[in-house]
Each structure stands twice: as structure tokens, then as C-alpha cells.
Image 1 (cartoon, one colour):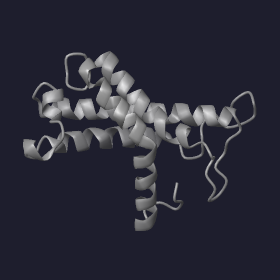
Image 2: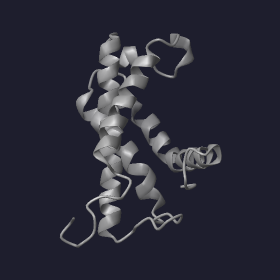
Image 3: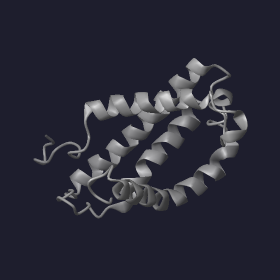
Length: 154
């Protein structure tokens, strides 16, 4: 509990989610090393100096930073008293969508210099992705709800 009497983070934030989400991201990045290079936007092996194990570490790191960003957004929503109420969202679409992307890009630029992810020339692409993130996030949430993977459409 925070000193304001509210939970520190939202109900959907757990240690299992942080650890499992980070490791799942690492596994997916590792699996991308097995996909033919011309099938993906950027080869994680290029970003991870050519080693599949490094791709796992890279994916885990970026997944972790994304979840830290998401938790940061949750923290600020709780301080403002914005809570998810049953099937009604907190009405904070930017705090629900942008912090995870901003955190991932920021950590990538700060800690992955010399790789494709830490390349300053990629900043324009990152800004375009940030602008598109709220729309992409909403579409994926609706798709997950439609498939029955999510209980709520947000």
C-alpha cells in the first residue's frame, strides 16, 4: 500500500507477470533467430551481435523494460485515483499505452549503443511507433477480447 491508502500498482500487476512476461519476451526474440532473415523487420541476431543466446538476453531485457514502463504508468494512475472498475477502463488511454513503449525505447537507446536498437538514427522510427502505439494497442486489445483471450475489451 502507498501512503495515500491505494495500492502501489494496479490489480493486474504481479511478480509472476513481470518475470514471466520478461522471459517470454526473451524466448520470442530467441525464436525469431530461427526465422529466415527476410521474414522479419529487424533480425534480433543483428541486434544481439549474431548470437542466439544473446537474442534471448536482449528480448528478456527489452520485455522487462516494457513491463517496468507499464508499471510506471499504473503507478501514476493509482496516484491520480484512476482505477479499473469491473468492465470499465481507468479512462487513461495514454497512460495505458505509451509508458511501456517509451521505457523500452529509452532503455534501448541508453544501454544498447552500437546495436540496431540503440542507433540514434532509429529515433524517427521510434517516434512514429509511439504515435501509432495507442491505435495498435487498442486494436490488439479488441482482437484479444474478440478471440476470448481477454475478459475486457481494453
